[in-house]
Image (cartoon, rainbow, N blue to C red; front, side, top):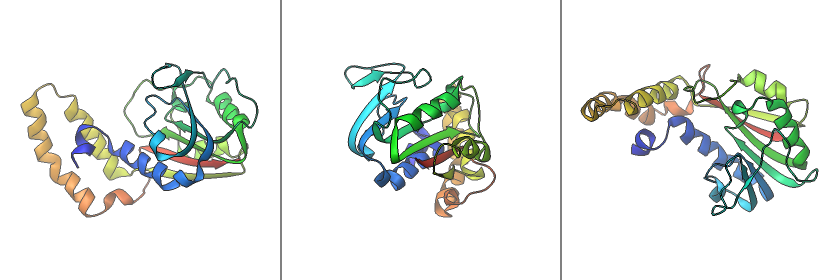
Length: 207
């Protein structure tokens, strides 16, 4: 439970559960677009190529910009990850087309974007309907899943406000005050429900 408060949002925790749930769909030659620190490599069996605007030779992260196109032939990859990337781009449609180009027929792409989420320098936000309508013309199957609900969104907002409180005493007092709320979410299984409030969207798209 401490992980949900100190190191990770509910949004991120639930996103990783979806990755784990559908991990069997991605194998073979894989591409992680905007890989960051390669935090998801351990979930998948395959040859993962990681690209990012900030390359890292030690972590084998290559330089690449999905908006400008990547130096790979058509249908190079069996599976593609694009986790929390599209919302930063000026031309996200071009990035989606590039993902489609690189994916082999029958291959899967996992794409996620935030919705009810703190401002983190992103350019656009998507609703579930808009996001799936953007993907449907290109992919043969688009399956969307809402990340979180009203209960988990409220927790993440409270968590962020607490983490940004400068006073350590105030931070811990407020945390102890709202801790029962997190316990109720966990014990009552409220995190498993979906409603009209969601922190993001997880899409499984098949070419």
